[in-house]
Image 1 (cartoon, rainbow, N blue to C red):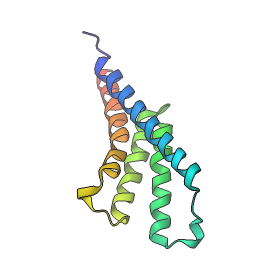
Image 2: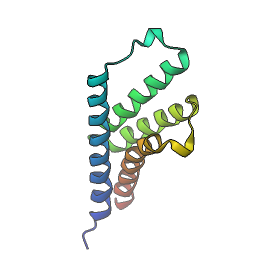
Image 3: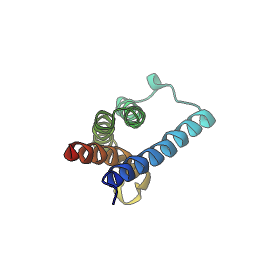
Amino acid sequence: MNKKLPENLLRWTARTLGAVMVGLTIWIAVGEGTPNPLALPWVIRIGLLSFAFILIGIVLAWRWEFLGGLVSICAWGIFAVVGNINWHRAHFIILLALPGLLFLCAALVRRSRR
């Protein structure tokens, strides 16, 4: 069995999910337009900023898996704490954490192999 198979499976699953999520977000932002953050309450501003950092972390993780995964998960934690989230209906919010977790796992598997 290929020793890199678990690492590659984690990495490419994270990249695929992350690309779909970033692409969907850009598609929605272009179609709907981005809101003026200065006209929004501070809680919403923090939520939008942390959402942006989730996506930035996913993009960073294509080159630096551990750093990007860490940025994405930390931003997701802020997003989850600040937002008033109904966890029973928050499937997309929960899915936002998945690419970051998979990137972190891939980085840790790679480091444990050394």
